[in-house]
Structures are given as C-alpha cells and as structure tokens.
Amino acid sequence: MGGGGMAALKAAVVAMGLLIIAGVTVIVVTLIHRMATPGATTAIAATLDEPAGTHIAGVATASDRLAVQLQGGGPDRVVVLDLRTGRVMARTGLAR
Image 1: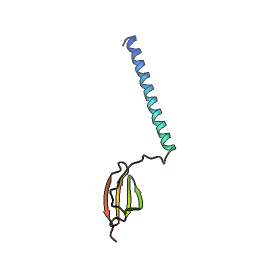
Image 2: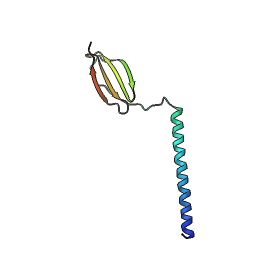
Image 3: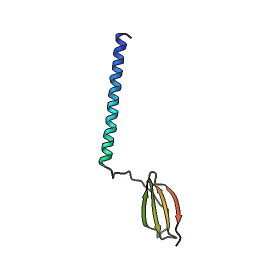
Image 4: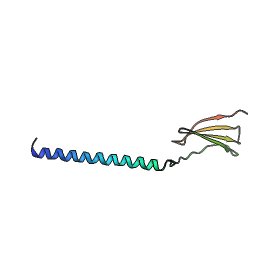
C-alpha cells in the first residue's frame, strides 16, 4: 500500500470512529430522555361503536391491552383494545 492508500485508510477509520461515537451518543441521549419521562406514552385514538346509553363501568390494563367494561345500551360487556393500534381485539358479553 502506498502513501496515498494509507492516508485514505486512516481517513476511513477516523470517519467510522466518529460515526460510532455519534451513534452511541444518540442512543445514550434517547435512553436518558425516556428514563426521565417514564409516564410519557403515545396517545392512541379508539372509537367504540356502541349503542346509545352505553357508559364505561371500568377499565383495566394488561401489557399492551386495555379492557373496557361497558354497561347500558344492551347487556354488560367487555371490549379489549390493542394499545399499540387502538383496534378492538375482542368483545365478550357478561352474564348476569
């Protein structure tokens, strides 16, 4: 390898080193930001197509799911939503 090839190799190594440092810095800053705001979540929009007179009687979360207990507008029921997408995953009626 001649003198020109060695200079190009050194420049490439320095450039890659700087990219690694920049990438690690972005990761560390992102982690610090997320740890500083643990309650910050992304809001989702979900529309439940339920009959008039329906009201929410209770809510429970489990992992990435939200269970909503509904009363009125028909038999009592539970609707399970995916918190990532806002989509209804399941519906079940409750026996009295």
